[in-house]
Image 1 (cartoon, rainbow, N blue to C red):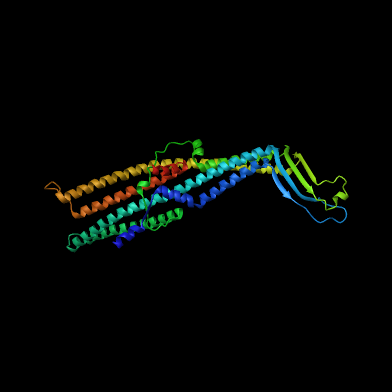
Image 2: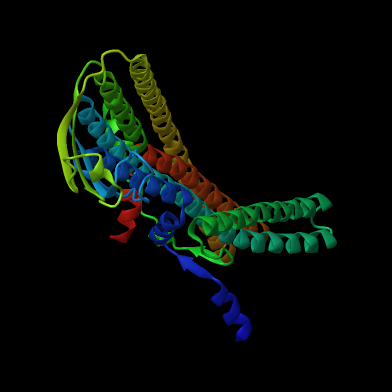
Length: 423
């Protein structure tokens, strides 16, 4: 009983949605993008907080001076400053908002990429486990065929080549199973790294993989809204354009600031002996207007910002063209792989019918006195053939699903596809 219970306890099943949720929480890319959102929020707050007064408290108290006082005898002073109006600041605030929008889109795009990575590994592990189970059945049939051929060769019925051919089939099954087992272990390790779960004995739940939705044609203009990474690039370009506008409007345009200062002077520093109108409480307030008349550095900064914005927009346009080409290529691949999938399904159905026919003849005979009945060798070969066609169908389904998942990622539907497994 312990020998049976311990291996079962070592296995751990996890659904696709749970794996994606755990991966999004532990992904360094997602955590980095979340930090980028916090940074962008702080940047927006910094851009708008310049209109709020900033207060500072200071003191320059010292011993009484020798001779004529040289500094302010303040016990403490309070300063308050704020920006009242600036042509450039409005554009800087818009740039900060666009930068925050780009950061949020980058975060969602990172989450979608993690969902794709987990989904591809999860689907491949599920495919490997199903094919390994089919290979185990095929290996039993191949071993039975080897035993039959050994007996027939020993009695002189079949030549040695028939036994070698059966052994070759069994060896090929072993080779393919080892390859799939290695791939399954690799997928377990990758899912373990993504989710933080132990990879040993990790099993999939095939029922948690939802069907792929029917893909609809999406224009290049819609890709900018559907693909969050592309949308983030355009939002970043928009932010850079607003920054360039703000840098340009710093030239030859006034900015208005407000200032307030209160000082409490000390009497023990002999100021009253030299100033007849000395008083302890002093306050001043005013408006400061600044008009840049000539500043080559501001002009150079505006040109640099404009070039940076133009480059960001060009890179976003290039990404859109590449995404459009990749999407079209994936749609064509899906058409070809769908046709190939249908071929493997038909071949699997044919092999199942042939196996049923051979097994029926093996039990009941051919039904005709002149036609020979099926032999055990033919039955084993039919079983092996049926398993091979089934494995071909699994391979075709997996190849098609990989391309479909990448298309869902390109069109921004991968997250909704994962969430559909919960319904």
